[in-house]
Length: 242
Image (cartoon, rainbow, N blue to C red; front, top):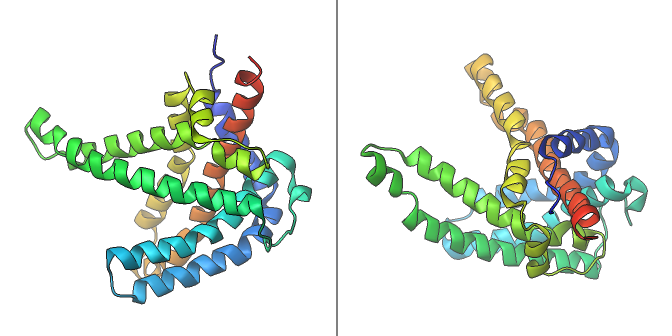
């Protein structure tokens, strides 16, 4: 019998890991986040186009790889496991992580395009009224499902363990829906906190929304990575041994 992924336990532990290692995470993410801000500013000033957007996404991927690997290792191995506490390190591990990011970007982009045609119009046909939000929700769930089933390659790579996408699919078999919920749940508190701020803060303050939301996005992003780390740890230890 396949052990069931403990959804709530993993999400709570993920937030515990994030807050318990906040100092190490902030230090490891400082330079990557500053670089991401610079890249995002350049992207906004650039003339929009598919190739331009793709080029800036390629620039972001290695920077994100540094931050994500640091988070995976802090959650699973502790802050002492980092080769460099400021994420100023590049090796075969980071190159492999970048490769997987690139592969996932292509896979999820193609999946989103197909879903956009097959799913987004379906609620209108089924219910006879404008229900784009439902189609969007279905798309998000499906994309997170696909991501979760293949994404065990990320924490495995961060731990210098060789894994390919087919192995991730096998490792997550029987836990696909639970893994989808586990990865989506950490986003809910951040979304609710952002909406509460939007409703409670005056308009002249909300003009600085990007600055206000940044800590929430940072915590939420780290929590999602942490849930993936802990899900991988559980499946590796409980399922991989069977």
